[in-house]
Length: 301
Image 1: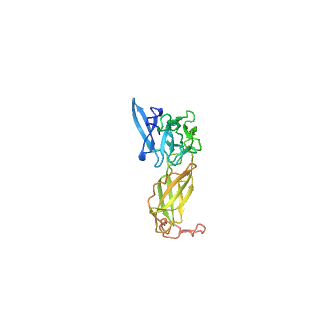
Image 2: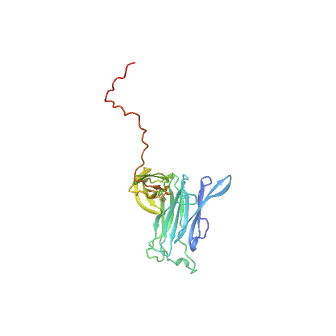
Image 3: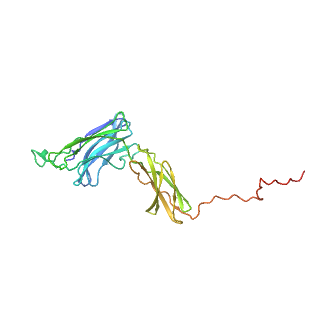
């Protein structure tokens, strides 16, 4: 039983956004958590955005969502499990630069159960009725550390999955550490068996700074070698390319949390045998004068 579909909690304010969620049926007969942001203007409430937390293999349920106190994003916490996965507590975040209706890539695993909940004692006196999982899930913003969201959820600590279930309540703080977004505007300039690749860093600035950028060369759809450039550089030199071959390049950013998706490919460039030459200056009518050699005097007027 993964809850009954009602909205279970709401956090926020009418101006910057009220956030709420519930557990509902999803694809493949698996439960998902749907979340919503609602704002109020002139006394009228309207849906700002909504999204799903789902899995292609697991049930997702027992969620709670909250914005940051500074309105710079939101965090959602939930349980996830399947026939082969004992329930875990997961979290995801979004920031103001995240696409509407989405969370940042990746999950934060906040707690794990050593075994599944197989306690059927809650069926008494009606055998066959499903037992509820936990029921304790909450999220709230920290009013002092305004970029922190606090969460509470449950796991089963009974290692054999026996009866009774040993519920444990976990409390945690999400500090909004996340991987960077992909760089943009990747530009490649061909040179002698090489290329110079430049990019624009994402306008999204994660709390964990970017440490490096990785450039990848492509021939068609096939990736090849990579060159790593330390941040804060916004360009890199890519040697060892083959004359006459057409290349494109991508860039991804990395920080202490993880790596961004690859950027969009650059426009294609064809590598040359010789580096581009500057245009020579036009010839003069007479050779230049050596300033160390005195010139003979001219005729007097």
